[in-house]
Image (cartoon, rainbow, N blue to C red; front, top):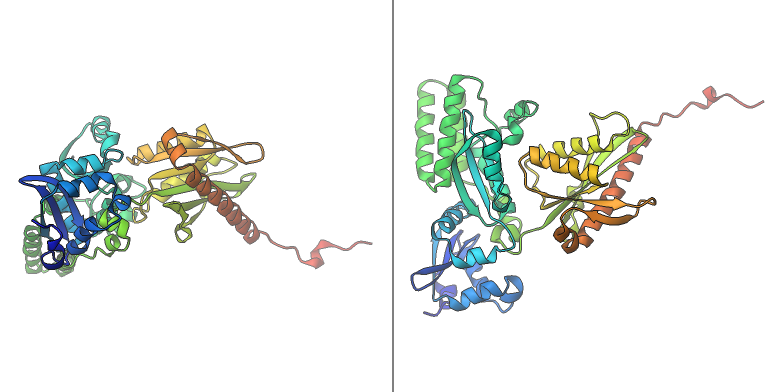
Length: 419
C-alpha cells in the first residue's frame, strides 16, 4: 500500500486520531487538529529535523494508516490518551523517553477532587499516602502536559470541579463565583456534584452522547419542577458540550499538534527599599524568547519588613490561584537556599511537579551560579539567566513606579525660606 496516496484522496480535513500500523501491530498513535494536514507532515522532507529519527524509523516501518474522526480537538486529545493506554504503541513510549506522560486522577472522598499529575514524579502514590485516600479513576497517558492543562480549562467550564487550590478555605468562594468550583454546602448540592463527577468520568471515557442525554434529562426535570434558572444553566452546559470551543488548543500549533512541547519558564523577583513599597513580578520565557505580554506585577499584601522569602511565597501562591494561566515547565527564583526551598514548598502544597532553580548572585548582584537540577541548569542556562535578568529589571521598574506613586511633594509655602 502506498501511504502517500492517502494524502490526496482519503484523509479528512477534520480533527481526530490516526494510527500508523505494520500489519496488525499499531506502531504509533497521534492526535490531530486536521487529520489530512497532520499525517501529511510525516512525509515532508524535513521530518528528521522536525520530529527526530525515532519517528522517521516509525514511518519507514509502517505499511498502513488508519484514523478516527472526532467532533473536536479536545475529544481527539482524550481519545488519543485512552487508545495509547489500551494499545501501548512502541513508538509512543520510545518518543517520550526523556519526557513524561500526564494523567488526570479523581479522588475517592466525600467531595472528590480532580487532579493532574506527571507520571515520572510518582506523586500520584505520594498524594494517596499523604492524604490517606485512593483514586477512583485515572485517565491518560496524555502525551502533551501543556495541552492537557489548556484542555482542563475547557472541561472545567462544563464540569465544575474541586482541585487542590479551590479546596483551600481562602479560595473556595472565589472559585465558586467564577464558576470553576461547585457549591457543595448542602445535601442537594452534594448529590448534584456527585452526578457532575459521574458525567465527567463518562466524558473522559469518550461517552459524550451519554453525557448530553443525562444533561437533557436533568434539564427537563428542573424545568418540570419550575427551577428555571438551574434549567437554563443546564441548557448552557449542553450547548457548551455540543459546541466545544477549543480555540485555546488551536492557537498554538506546537500545542495543538504535539510538536517538540513549548518550554515555558517563569521567573520571579522581589523588590523593595528597607521593606517599603514591596513588590513582586513574574516574567515569562517561552522557547528561549521573552513573552512580555504575559509578565505580571504583584503588590505585596501580607508581608511587613524586608521579608523577601515571605513575599516570594505570597507571589507564587497568588500566581497559582490563576489556573487560567498556563503552568510553566520551570520556575526561576532569585536568591539561594531559602528562596528555592520556599518555592518548592509552594509547589508541593499545590500538588504541582514543576522544577525550580535559583540564580545565586555575588556582592555586585551579578549571577555567579545556578542552584537546582543540574540537567536543567546546563540545558537551559541561557534561558534561565535571561528570565532572571528580565525579572530583576521588571521588578526594579515596578518598585520605582510604586515609590513614585507614594511620593507626596511638599508645597513650597510649607518648606520655609532661608534668611
